[in-house]
Length: 422
Image 1 (cartoon, one colour):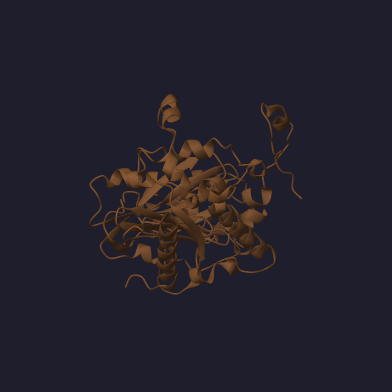
Image 2 (tube, rainbow, N blue to C red):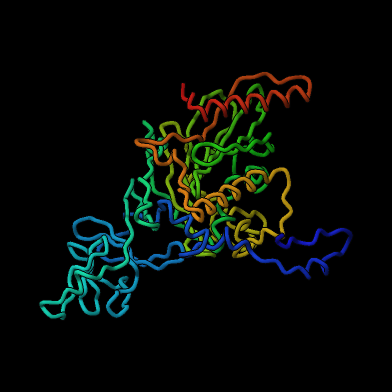
């Protein structure tokens, strides 16, 4: 059994705690090629850049512990190649983008977006080197302003998933993020399945309704999991669900909701991937969802400009009003789960970690870790929502609690079964 932190009893017990020598869970947290976690993550598409940033020069990027060169050639095709030219190793971040592919600046070797070597200047006319040798390349797909990459085995490549929340009428998607947190992706992403933190870390920035710890449930669904937070708001019961589309995409129900007006299955305000750049750096990137009835300060809610998504404020201000960045990064470069003492409100964190472990095990045992629902043709049904039901409060505390739980179960059953929108 893995070593756990000493369960301290009694005052001034720091000395005994300091004797613990605990390590990070490498299976979950390491993301490089050949690692269990890295091999799992490489079975999925990940956003790696903004299409608007790719102009007439390539970009050096780091994803899943690998340094790569990303570019858009003169014909508009995107390419993602191993960083170092196979000839003498010069970095293709200094390559010359051409109408077709990219050319190494050092000796002119040229490469197509799929890794085919197009030219090897200086070789004899009868040389077959370029016909026998390929350069490392990964498939790339541009979607609504984001550039996605698949970095797994070519034969296992899944179709690019298009979720229904990306195709809603009267909504527009705008690319968002690109901010890098200096810590492991697990501690960034599991935050999304920890709704209790909003009542403390974000109680000033979100609506007052978020200051109440909800009645909680955590459910698996066809794409991964979701939390169900149920609150009493006057004569209404507010059911709020944020979903985790495995392995690293969560869709966030609006943080500007107040729960005061009945509604059915209102859709997410954001889709956010936590893309592991390496073991200790993670990029948040995704889409903001804007609809016709967004509040005037939608920019504040979607962009996270005032609730601490980056260390862009004075240190003392961050101490007085910390945000997600401070909470997640201060855990350390890689969270050591063995020193945690999880409680009842951490069920979502535990479930998320279990699903990641199951995906890792699927890859190790030769199974496909991609949920079948993510391979569906056409748009893929998703589950993040706000639903607000008119329901008078019960006089009896136990009866009221049961009513909240019942409404939460019924709404969530309907959402998972696809009975919303009606």
